[in-house]
Image 1 (tube, rainbow, N blue to C red):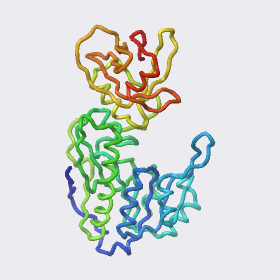
Image 2: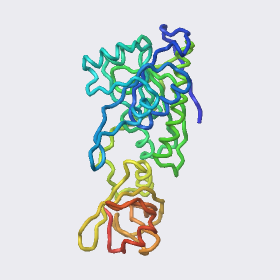
Image 3: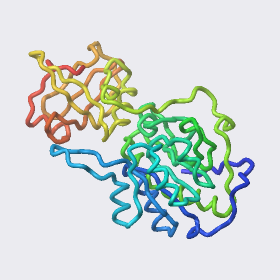
Image 4: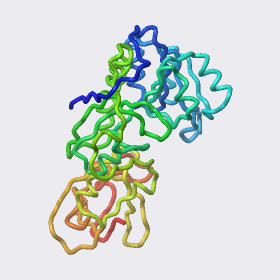
Length: 338
């Protein structure tokens, strides 16, 4: 892992001041955003307010559920706003009343200019990729899905187009062939908290340097990271083994890759797949065909071999290792995946 300090001409509005005097407003919603907020609070930075998404109904009872960032803010008595609309006048007045010098955004939502341009020192975002690659809502997933061997985190200043502002700092992180998106998520989350405080420190002491993304010398096409939907997660067995293997680990443990298990009578069952192994060897089977002993293994045919399924989940059941599932579920080579 290595940090890259991006250098160009420093903005002229930074000047040295104490972290207790710098008024910070923090914006974020999921678990990924809690670590950076925690680092700011425990580091003694002056977080004057927190903004997160409105509560959402969850579970069978549809009870309103707090976001992880809201829960942290409540636990630490931080002022909190949960706007439905970011251009709402009442919200903008409340935000202005906090008199923030700087805003920090981690895994929140796209901000209108009236919000990101409000603080005198601007707004910076922590993004879970090595920008300008993987702009979008799901950068960690897509980096693993695409079989990348490296990813990282970036702090950058917000501007009009999403994820296109001037880059401040980056940290590079290797992706092992056995890593799933959950492992990479947690690594980037922890490193992100440290990078956020380091970026604030650079702003405080006037040493910050940023560079436009178009000047970063990236060769080839940029890779997008669009939002992932249920249909995005369906496994296409008519692909090479490595591609399917990376797809499964790029969606594990959440939101999870899925496929349909076709029974001999034609009925289908949706199966989530969490862990797999690569078995590259020639065969003459149709993609999606099964090989199993009904006890210990499930191998699914792909273009150039088999994908060995190591853990999976049936509807209404918990996630199980393959041998555990086969003890209570009859499966033979007459079944197929599609």
